[in-house]
Length: 243
Ligand SMILES: O=C(O)CCC(=O)C(=O)O
Ligand SMILES: [Fe+2]
Image (cartoon, rainbow, N blue to C red; front, side):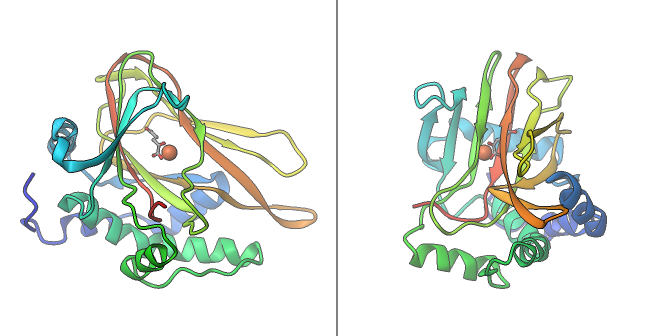
């Protein structure tokens, strides 16, 4: 993949083209929201192609072996390929006000600085210095168990996933799942077919929900339903680094 900046700001332009007021309202209501198309089908194909390039990755996880579901994923090495770095840099300032608002509602300290680089520096100083961008690969019958991507005390409460395949064409099944544990109530489930190349922003650990007693934290898990046919690759962008 070309790591030089060939298309100035194209990724930032796509991120910025979103209606962030509507996205914020949606994520506040449902814990997740669809973003604009961030990668073209050609760019998605190029990133899928990286899966076989061992030098791009620091670790491979076989999900069945660790009982995370079935399938495989790989952690990218940092520094990331250009689209990944650009997208993370462009997304962070839009996600930051949502995170700060949430932590304010929950009476927690919003420790995140204005830039992603400063925040990652804080992660590294706390011993979380490993890259967290992941390329996931699911074939028929593979699935991703409901989980939360936590790698230490340093947590950014929103993350973004991008489907690198075309649902209904490249794969059937493989819905993205959210499970929100509501305080003193049964959990709420949601399922989404992620359109190719679009981002989907969702809650990493917990988020504020309002009840008669005020705001309380609702833990949110995410996962993927079984792929019924075909193949599904996704790019997962987490905004804290890992211990
Ligand atoms: O493959 C997916 O849609 C979800 C992957 C995942 O666990 C994540 O984005 O953190
Ligand atoms: Fe995840």
